[in-house]
Image (cartoon, rainbow, N blue to C red; front, side, top):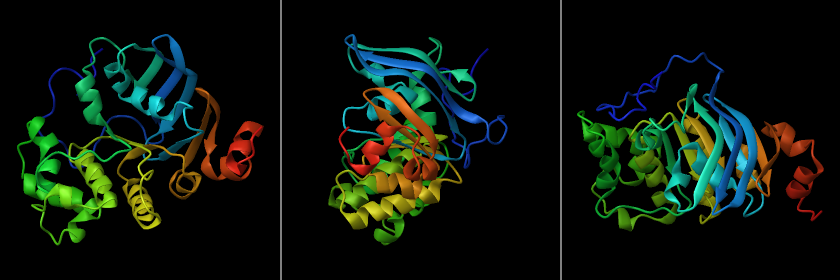
Length: 273
């Protein structure tokens, strides 16, 4: 069985809204017994969970618990780390992503990722947004695409409608929103956000939170964060990791107010067990 769009031939024109044949409410991602090791050292152990289409999932837990590793397992980024070994299953719309014939570059286009540190390309805001679509062979109007994703990220008005502003001149919060706009420009179905507000002030953090929430009808989003308040404000579902293990996963309101596991409660209340 082949996986449409996940082979060696990339799409040349991303659609305005991703569509597929899966029924509404079906898991867009299904993880089963996922394990990741780095040079033999376990980083994730037997993670099994479903990510529902069109929802926001927050992954919380203490530093070093495996949040970033989990996100990177979802689009095969861990493979770029020497000594990494992944076992178990990650299925995207029913297709096993770790099959040898699956193109990891196309996986990373469909499942985009924004990292904790906003790393920008040299040049203008437009150059940053246009890079991915150009590399994928996009044949449409790049300026219209840039305006669309910059408006979605709240940057178009900040820039006064001028995408030729040097990217290096942006504030920290604007740089993070540009990274999100850059990821949106290649039309991912899933967006992974790794600590998107870690280095931001409260105002910039609030804007990122509002942006994440505004994207929910159009995207499935998975956020790794140490900010429990951000998780509570933006996500539908929350997973709590501890030492590479999935302790608890469920509706955010339930997990944050009435956790089932005492380890989750200890983390949320700041008590050291």
